[in-house]
Image (cartoon, rainbow, N blue to C red; front, top):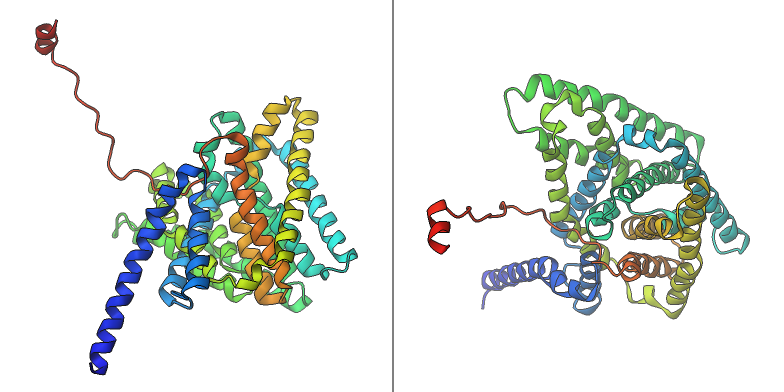
Length: 409
């Protein structure tokens, strides 16, 4: 067999591998979900198994691109969910919640430094990874976990508010190496925030009338471009995508097509399609020594300490501030436990930028997986899931005709 035949065989094998991957990411998780395992965790586990088992897809540019688009679309969706009018409704409670969470992050970082485990900058990032809920993931799971609209309001508002503060803290922590670095990065981010409304306004006036239904594509392109900018600033893709989502949400009144829920639905559909590739890619990045005994112990210790503290602070605060029953407060606290996306992102940053010990990285992964499983286990409801919205409308049988009813009678 000559070289061209070998190459052709290799390409055919690669195509089969991609088809098998699609089956594994979109069919297998639905099968395993019946045992209460979220589809995101299944995709992550598949990535780890493929990487450490047979070494497939490691360093694959296609998977890396789809993964990037997945995290960009997810945080674009989270940004679009930011409704400042809604946040103002519970401003006093949200401010109190943010202050408590900031104090917890500061206390956790101080403890890690005092114990001699980490320096200040990685300690703050680890504290953020442990204590910041993954807003996009939580918002997508609300339908399956929470039915009460009041509880959904508070979960959504608190998750969004905490993520805004956490992203700001992450930005300043990563760029605090020097005044020049922090100043330049802040100017670039501020310039982005100021330019984006002008871009949306110009697009709505100049381009959209001549290119109908192109607003969704424009939104995704701008989110990807801004995500790349913030990635090059050293603060990862999610900051730029989230900023675009927030600005676009506040600009919806200038673009009629963005006022409806169709735009949010389209972005959610895109995220649902691409996010499994992000989790799969994150699993591909794992190494065998990430799951040592020390990493397992560290992860379970994080769960044993952080989860009760997170639940208790929310329950006590709501009991005191809103006079809610323990069950009502518990129903708000538990769905906010998942940290999967935010923890995975920060864990990757910590390993790439700070060269943290493998047991810290592995411990964060264990913690993220456990906290993502807990809401469905504790509430005994279906697990969080990135589900694609239905493409085809539900078929409703036509009502029986009068003569048919008379005949049956």
